[in-house]
Amino acid sequence: MKLNDIERAMQAGDMGPARQWAIEQQIAVGNFFDADDLVEVNQVHMMADTESLGESGVEFLERFANLPWEERRCLVPTVTDPRGIDLESYKSLNQEEVFAERERRAIKAFESLSVMMTDTCINYQIIMPPVMGEHLAFGDTGSVIYTNGALGARSNFEGGPAALAAALTGRVPRYGYHLDEKRRGTRLFEVAFEPKTLSDWGALGGVVGRRLESYWEVPVLEGITGRPNSDELKHFGAALASYGSVALYHIVGVTPEAPDTKTVFDGPLPAAEPITAANVADFYKSFGVHEDKVDVVVFAAPQLSLVETQMLARTMEGKQVHKETSLIATLPPAVKADSDRMGYTATIEAAGGTVLQGVCFYQMYARETGEANGWKRLLSNSAKLVNIIQGYGYEPVLASMEDCVDAAVKGRMGS
Amino acid sequence: MSDIVIKGHRGIGETVTGTALVAEDNFSARYDLDRIKGVFSRPAHKLCGQNYVGKILILDAAKGGVATSWMLREMTERNMAPAALLLNDANPIMAQGAAFADLPFMDRFEEDVTVAVRGTGYG
Image (tube, rainbow over all chains, first blue to last red; front, side):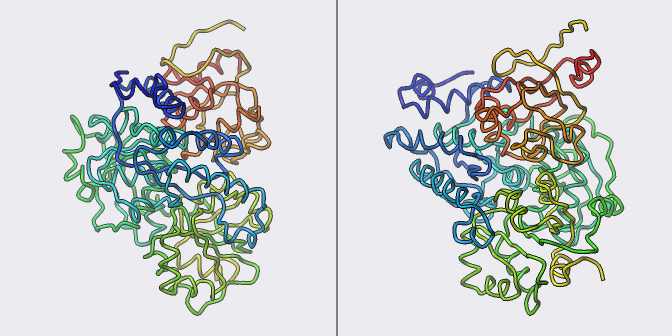
């Protein structure tokens, strides 16, 4: 890989051990993917939950946190993905003190590096929205796919250590979705289905994602007749990235790099693969139903925007969650503050729901928290969540927000 | 048992020797594993219930979220990691995680590695 003077200084250790570690990681990954050089990024978004970090990750961070300021500070604005614990609510969720203590240590270390603890996976909606063409290092698959697909900015999936490296060097290896030629369509889907709810958009993302093979595929969707809003594309992309492990999509006539089908492909178009309403219905059915009992209803993954929070409050207003069912909504701290001020939190809590901030359900020690609270049969309107949470010992089912609230009130699904 | 040679793209990490655990399925540390017990835990995974600690894992593609990067190092530090990971198709997360954890890792083989290795009787 070609390195400039600054990058060589980092590699030689002239800018301290943290930046030296960071650029060596980036050179290893760059070589693995045949990158020619590094590209400067404008912003970093880092996965920082302690469930993923583990004890070893926290100790690793603490080593850098004790370096001199000039050697440890982030070189570009750096924000965080959700944490592992909501420090205001963990006791009521029966979460262990050891997790909270690990969280406090991680936060202290991140802050020492000048990381902004935004604790959100929807940074692209609420912190600093990406701009077409800018290079970024984002660290949540939903955040990356929205950034690439809906906004036309450029990021690969940057896992926690890789995002930390990007924060310390201010750049990333130039491969994958930083390159024009990798952003072209590889598969074409003809959609004969009109999503109506957020869970429908997630289900559509799940249907497409299940048909994809690898990170390097770029699905292009034709036939979307409506004009999806930001929350709809958020659920679509989060599910697509979760099921398909892909980082970029194009929707013809909707997203910025796909004004028409021909423009987004090189050479002859691939055969269009149909997606029907029956495919989406089968996707919902693949999770079954909880006719007997629902233990926990979750609105998360991605965290809720203020608009979704208002929608949830309106849906729950005047209702009461069943005494044997829990209902949880996870919000970014910035949205929680607005939700508190506007009365949505009070409405959701009066109906028996719990509003958490700065966490997301699967990142908050879901296995241990589920066992501590007797949660197994889970219901959510997030197609992403119902995918992930199976690995944590839950039996998840997908339904619309309205049906989720209805089931929370009855304590079970169906009539 | 005869030796076979399967070439792949330049990888990350040291040379290792070990027993292979092979399946035509994908890999995500967060979605597929019970990292405490060291077994595959996602019910739909073809290796569900199998212990992966110290094995050379041979699977198809990297899947799932960004958490795998932190998790691979955490697994290696607790001595609860596979000995190496071979995939047909890596994604950035897996490469970043392998670099961070110093876990031997390769992809882009000249043939389907999940079929080639199993065919030798190693798996």
